[in-house]
Each structure stands twice: as C-alpha cells, then as structure tokens.
Length: 119
Image (cartoon, rainbow, N blue to C red):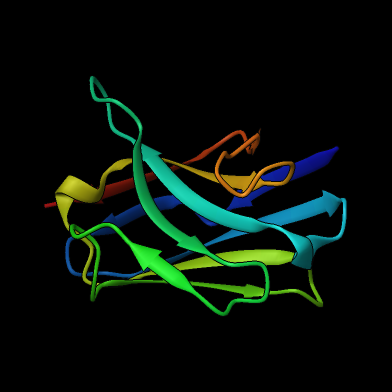
C-alpha cells in the first residue's frame, strides 16, 4: 500500500510560479514510476508529467513542456512539480499518482491540490 499527499497548490498570477510536492509513504519509493495529472472544471483528467523510479527518465505533456519540471528526491520519498510561466489554462486540481504494481498503470493516487492562475 502507498499513501500519497500533495501540497503546494494555491492562487498565483499568470506568469508566476508554484512548486507542488507529493509525499509518499509505504512501499520502496524508488521502485516505482510516478506522475502528475490535472483536472480542470468540466474537463477530463489529463496527463501532465511522469518520472521513472530513479529519476532517469521524464516525460511531459506538450502543453507544459519547457515550463514545468518534474523531479523526485528518493531520500525524502517526495516528488515535485516545478511550474513556471503559469497560464490561466493551467488552473486545475493537480494529482500525483504512483505506478506501483505495474509500470503501465497508475494504481495509487493522492487527494489533489488546487492550482488557480489568475489573468
């Protein structure tokens, strides 16, 4: 079992920055890939970024590439999402997820943290 808790959301003006954190507990943190997803009001949840267990690979949605950076600190069992040059379209609830039992499926999710970007 893995527990995930996000933090760091808030209200920011367009062009600003935020850093989200996802603290994990449970199974060996470095053994599984993790990702960030987001869901805006009235829209489906969408992929934002992913990172391998050792941080050796990362992947980003085109909409955030060059603005967001995903990272993890396995000594602190925490994953991060640094978000720069934020836009109003980035407004959403952001969720972290872990692919623990299978590399192809995210099977543990956090409760989400709200990010609101004002224009």
